[in-house]
Image 1 (cartoon, helix red, strand yellow):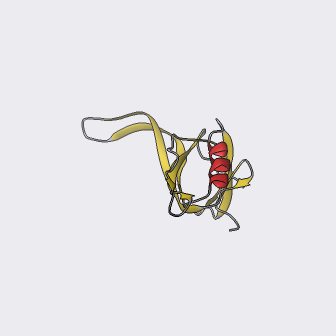
Image 2 (cartoon, rainbow, N blue to C red; image 1 turned 60 degrees about the vertical axis):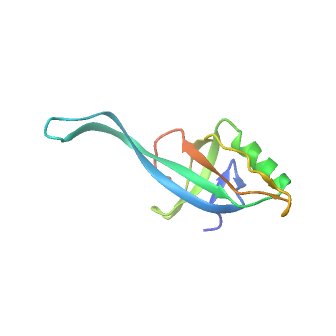
Length: 123
């Protein structure tokens, strides 16, 4: 593995945490009187939570520019398939971190990267 994730071919740096929530989406989901689930499975949507370590103003500005793009191509390492996956994503709401005057760096922060479409493993 040479990197964890890239947005529009720009490698994400300062990553402290990278968690993949493999969310399952169902439609027409309900339970009958016996408690059995009746639903149609739509697919898996891998929502990715990234936590970034402290960083300087230049790095934070570049990262915020990437995250503020309405939609982007995210390449990320999928441990399940042991390959890199690529798909269209968007960034959820995030709060820019506080500037730490002692360290002269911006504090760590997190953001969710949310898939546009269901997961289809790349070859």
